[in-house]
Image (cartoon, rainbow, N blue to C red):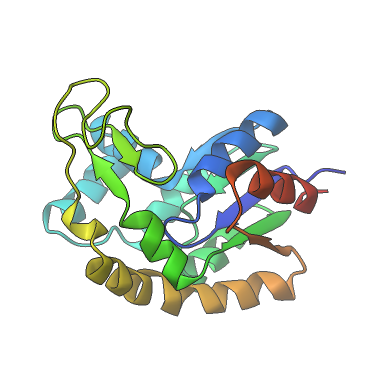
Length: 209
């Protein structure tokens, strides 16, 4: 039987967002991106969104419990989902366990050098916001947006130095305890994310069986 309640974990640049969309479509279940969900709650000025906005306005992280409540409401009544962006730490994983049963956790592994290589190749159009990657999805004309004809720019958080810091602060210290948590529950599967999109997708599909 194919797992249908799925959590995706992985460092920035591992391609888990791309794989989340494909897996959800193939399984016929919703793709739930925590970032998209949070933005929707804020834009729609829901009760939870208004609470989150207070933290965002102060430049603070939205508390685990508040994000978890958004996830809880979104997952209510669902028999399947691909969850991308939650949990981000052990506390969130423990909260999620109290909300729903997770059948499979896919961890997309990528070494530090490849993370830096991929993320430092990202470019964005300052006018329309479209994101390109000089390695995997370059513009048709060098360094120019296909839609706007405007010169692409590199975000300040996509420089190698900042990427290294993000890996250390936001990812490396949190992932270990989560992997131990899910490994102990026999739901964790490791996916080598170094291959191309099709290769990684094939490995992810097999890990759900």
